[in-house]
Image (cartoon, rainbow, N blue to C red):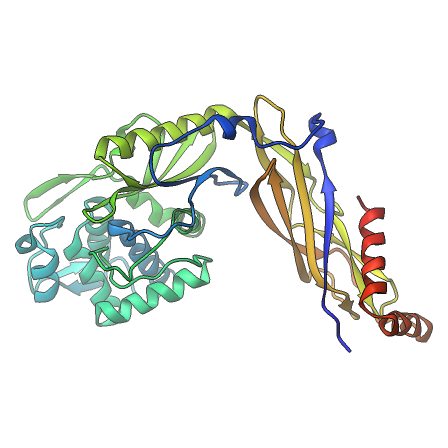
Length: 401
């Protein structure tokens, strides 16, 4: 009978960091932001440097256009459309999102074809609602069908607390996202579509004899920003999703629900400045290092080593005084045969009391089916039940602490 066992293997790496007792990050415990929700993430390591109500849902307003752009980028990558593909600006797109609407628009002409590349610039750079609707209709036929595609893509990339209803970010109580999900989206776009990401940094557009500057004020704030989008909705306030690079280090920042344009920019800039100044990268496990071991049932070996794909790095405070802890978890025991490179668990890394990183773990070697004696021994362990298996799991954890 298959029995599910959750092994949590505690690996304390604080000795290497010279720390004596667990406590929250020194830098993080002293930082404060006035906005209702925020997150700051190191792009390379995925380390969460700061978060405040990062899973609280807000209507995303025009930050939804970043999800719209991601769907179009995916269509381009799949070869379903090209940057030169023309999409006609429908009456619906013109009336609801263009000049007659009174909102942000690229001022595309009704019933005229516009290249996908120009529509992307219109939606991203000046937050044009007409451009966003035209892209949605061009890709999926209707904005509703496009929203379904947005949700499908969001789920695929790990945005677990988001629900999209339209391509523009127009007010809809059912359209929701979080700071954490928006940071996940930004990281995915930067990593997966580096060429298309450059559109976010364009200084402006000139369309239909109307010149407009990029609406993202973070780009000119002197912090090294090169994307992504800012937004406002009367019901929820001012939002910003941004990314900046200094000295080769990229940070992703999200602030949601600011009270004013000034607060939005000030808090985003403050978070970025603090992040760049307060943290340094530390390697806690080298590439191919054995991080833990997982129990194997019926194998030539009773356990198998676990490793990450590449080195595991986190950002730690430059001031020190932090305890870094890694916990390995898997559902087991694994059933032989086990192939090398199989993902079987994950490692959760915490800095003080804050979870900062989750890393998938893979088997380091093959474990073939064991001899009759090996299988008989494991069968005896099955007969003894959960308590015996728990003791074995604890023993393995103790040996590899």
